[in-house]
Image 1 (cartoon, helix red, strand yellow):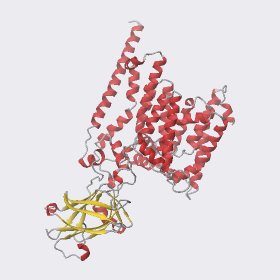
Image 2 (tube, one colour):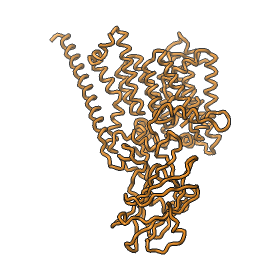
Image 3 (spheres, chains in turn blue, cyan):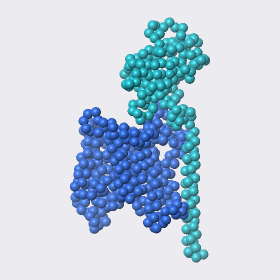
Image 4 (cartoon, helix red, strand yellow):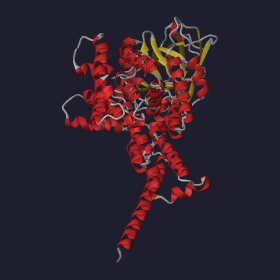
Length: 387
Length: 221
């Protein structure tokens, strides 16, 4: 509470900095304690490495493989059809590079790096949350001690994706297109959907242009007349293109990251059919929704939140988030919960909405902290909805 | 030169430099895209990943095989069976190895005492989901149609057929492909790589001149 008071309007700059940096730190510690307790309840090995290894589930092991061994060529060893090509390189590259400096196992380095990324993502979100103290506390709790905090603190791309998304949207908020473009390039090397943040950049350019009184029809002329804008747009997908070139040179197929999805059983299909199949996968006993139902709820809820973003005139963020949900949905509902909770513009707005009244804020905070323990156990136990 | 002119010249240079960088970025991205739409991959890669014309990704796998030897596809025989499985198999489970996808392949280097004909004997059962009552399987040896069968019931059936001479002509390696016409996907929208059709229990090749036991002579339809 003392921390909350020092962040009130009128507080001095130093106090504000202490608040902004201390709040996520508090939740780093509480989150570690809660998740470790969940781990300790099922493990007899009380080490940080064992904790980090236990929380490394599903895609995490692929990223460990990339950080340690890089990408394979074709044919893949051990008669496998599934190459690592589907997993984007930036985050495992960063972890791999840090790992060369520190003499720790990859998963330990990755876990610490992920916590650092999520911490930084919280700090970057402060201005995006309009310096709303309650929303900031809630956002930090959500990322670092919340029900899905394991996604943001283990070796998945979510920690870096959330951080880079926040930086891009902060740069756009400040109309710094070149910075937005450069960080978009990094985002596009983190996950394939990162490339689509370029639409948010163009939308922000259009918004700024219109605010300056420009006519709609002459917008392209304005963009072509400004080389800095052209560079910002063209550099945004540079990370994706660099990865395509790398795959072409190593595998012979620049789109191997897409084509390998076949080996994971992902096939392009009818989005509505996938949603219907998910919703209609009723539980055989009890009332708790099944994993496909949770995934369908997450997709629908995420798209609804995109609608709210659009209603609040955050068109760029709405378009970006809608693409980030719809694109994987074309192939099936797998990982949908993780994809939705990893969309910073959505969660930032949700935290603002939940902070509108003190009661909802307190309830959400209690829910986040209370759900961290059972959800971490579910993650460790391999609950499919959390994949 | 007045300062204003220097500033203007620098500004012009910055603008030109900006356009040059934008052009370079656009050029690089278009070039990479042009490379990517023309992949340099082999036919097996193309068929499985790009064209999706097969669910069975061909590999170099080939196991050695001596005529008369029975290879078990149950758990106890997995070491030997793994050597001859090329693709399209999952397991073994307790009582056999499931087919996976629309085609499965086995490949063997055959050591033959003579150059006579060969007879294949397979023990296999159908994977069925009501209302489906049968599985149609087409067997090709070295690309030549060898046998068509219809499996019904959940109990394993022994199926024997003579491999056509055309498939054997001078061949030391036999590639046996199973095409499943009625594979069952786990869900309506699931990928065809997950289809199930049969469970293979054992595989054997005999020379056709060899005297066979009565059970060997029970053949599929």
